[in-house]
Image 1: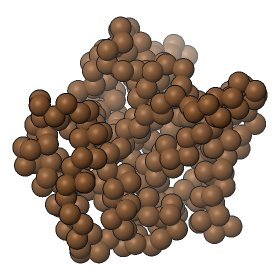
Image 2: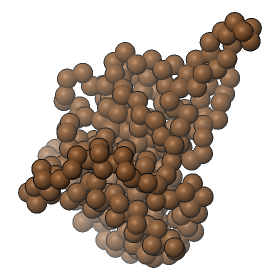
Image 3: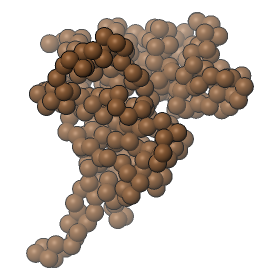
Length: 306
């Protein structure tokens, strides 16, 4: 089975569980193939956790789920050393973060202290526990879900942590046809129990390498730079994108191109992933009257193609 067939099988399996959301499912797969962390933000009950579970299962990776709460401590994530009398020494008991996929459910219900404990892991792929640095498994992905900031008991993620997520997506409510299928169909969690990994870890690494090998021509990079410069102009956003965000856009666009069956990046790929990749890093100017995603789309309309 070649790469495109594997990708089609992966998307097909995910779309049987998450019905009526093919674009969002493709964005999630692009994010993980690009080696990035994923943030899913929406109201409770629209399938955020189900999507995160389905992604972990479909990618055939070892995963753990943590329900973030206000009393969750950093050590609850990373693990602790406990004295064992028989061995007469302290033995480290790893926490749930030592998994290839960490499902951080309702991440913004945890305190800022616990949220920031995730920062080193996401950026460095390692954690420091009691002065000792321990490497995390490879690959290591964080798939986090969060509720809107205006809900009770939530803490806004700091900008430094939002910047560590390659993409933020929102599922939204299903259309009538998809909702009818959900009402008529089997329970989604039951369906997931029968899911098997479509990819092995080696196949995933191969696809990730193929993403890196996708060609981004000079004029395409010029276009990305024009978009990044537009975010810094002061016309659209209070603060522009960092160079790291520009690199993230190129990586995500390469993954989008691979999913579309091409070995080169087109402007359409950049436009398709730009709102999901940069909107969570930007704050619209006060008189815009639009949210970050709508403002990114308006900016794309205004920036001419190469």
